[in-house]
Structures are given as C-alpha cells and as structure tokens.
Length: 126
Image 1 (spheres, helix red, strand yellow):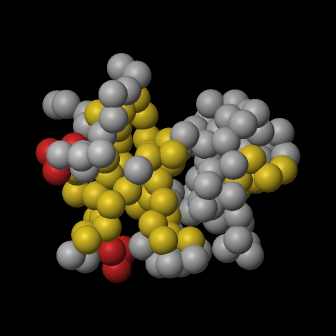
Image 2 (cartoon, one colour; image 1 turned 180 degrees about the horizontal axis):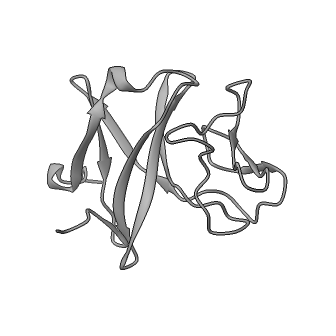
Image 3 (cartoon, one colour; image 1 turned 90 degrees about the vertical axis):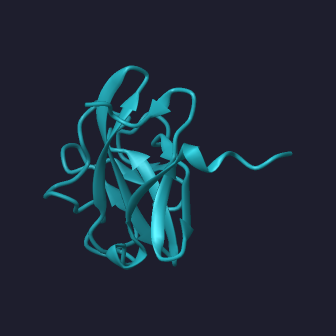
C-alpha cells in the first residue's frame, strides 16, 4: 500500500506545544462542508486530534479555551454535560455520550505536528 501524499498533511503546531495532559491546540477544519473546530492533545507521549464536538449534544468540549482534560489529566471531559472520552482513542467511557469522538489523523515529524485531510475533512478555505 502506497503512503498517502504529503500534500494531504497540514502543519498544526510545534511538537513542544502539546504536553501530556496539558492544554490542547485548537484549529478549524471543513468537515462534510461545514466549518468546525477541532483540537489536538498529547496523551501518554502521543499526539491525538478530534473534532471538538461532543457526541451527546453537538457542543464544544472545552470548559475553557483549549482545556479538554479532566482534573486528573486522564480523560477528555465535555464541560456541558459530563461526557467522558478516552484521550487515546476518543471512545466514550462514561456519561451521556453517543459513541466516540471523530478522530483526525496526525503525523509528527521534525518537531512539527501535522493533521491529515481526508475525503470529508479538509482545510478551511478563506
């Protein structure tokens, strides 16, 4: 299987900007024709990204800008209704969620985190 072309990669942030259990980095994407917020976090040494949309009610998760983890820095927490998600997979782990978060593929190399566009996930055009 051939690797995906590099033109599908979009620089997001420096690797050092994502600290385990710390603040995330928010960014905009075009998801299925709509502009949506997304976010990247680091958990157990790996960078992960998701649409910033709770599966219970389509609201953003962060309780303050770029704060997605609970107090223990172990879970992603929806500030509105308390849905709990696994930071490594986006799977629902408790509360009123209906399935997992939409995961966005990240590639990290040379000190930069990039996100990969897909058929229904593109950069926002201005």
